[in-house]
Length: 280
Ligand SMILES: C[S@@+](CC[C@H](N)C(=O)[O-])C[C@H]1O[C@@H](n2cnc3c(N)ncnc32)[C@H](O)[C@@H]1O
Image (cartoon, rainbow, N blue to C red; front, side, top):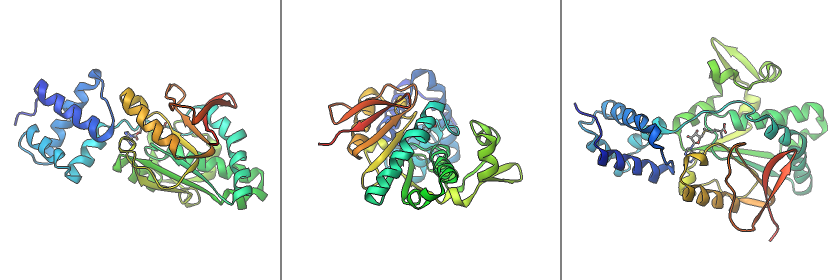
């Protein structure tokens, strides 16, 4: 079976990936696309890459999910970027609690949550807040946390809340591990108390398919760097439109995305850049 891709076939798979996910795979990652196609042709029992491409163009659910899963970079870690989480701890979470006191609810959305470390880090910070201020528990319980990703495999693991190896250790302080996880053979299992704080949903930033309603805090971290400039700008605009007045949008520490127009204002919170939705 010959699964090597001609230049034109490579281009077709590349465009397919970009159309479905927004991901603009750089040339340096060409081998990854070649390997993914070869593996999928084999595992989906197709005879040629052309047959696989036809399946993808027909939006065959299984083929598409496996194609996406093999080409998304799910790298993540607990409390990624100290200054970001410090800003959440000292400014943003207290602000959300004030919002709950005023209106009865607050909503957080983690827009590309990979295997769950990002929303669960936020959930643990909320619980840590309650440890220090038990009277705030009633307000923290009114904060809704929704997390999404395009990769169904990553979402399955996120829902399970079970981690091993580097996934279990990278960035996770011992105190949080001891408090919120238990050992399960060679894995660590997140306690249901934290797991149940997060609702995981499939989303596709490239299609602008986002959970309904508006959010007081949106995290869109370390994903739009993989998109074309236009794609990243469109997704950023969709996200900005989902913010409540005064809602905050945070990107990754090394990202330069910014919503167009003057619907949001750039500001530093605890030394970390966020975009705040203006009142209209
Ligand atoms: C590098 S991880 C970042 C995870 C986490 N936000 C962090 O900063 O640690 C990027 C994630 O974006 C997801 N992703 C890629 N394209 C996406 C899309 N179009 N819609 C939603 N998620 C997407 C990938 O599946 C992957 O899990």
